[in-house]
Image (cartoon, rainbow, N blue to C red; front, side, top):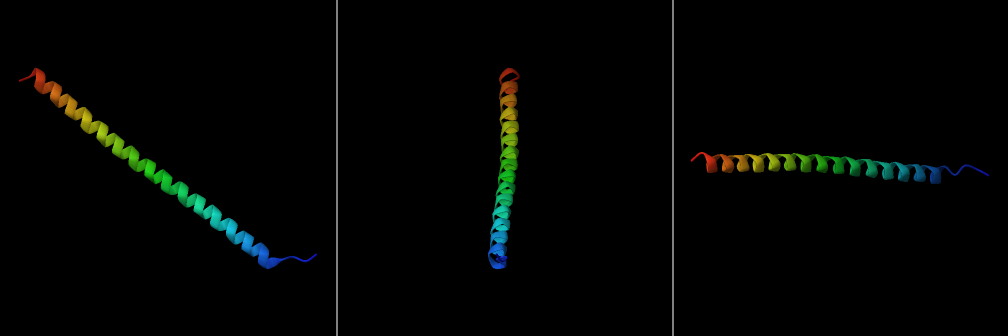
Length: 61
């Protein structure tokens, strides 16, 4: 029984590629969630400001 080096190297390369793909996918997902969170916060702040302005103008005109 001999060591089949080319097959072992191919398997190692495939495993590394698979993990690299998984890590990159997770990084992209994390970045997208972060961007969505920023957009959600900005939207909430702008809506709150608009509601406050509407409320203020309704009672102080």
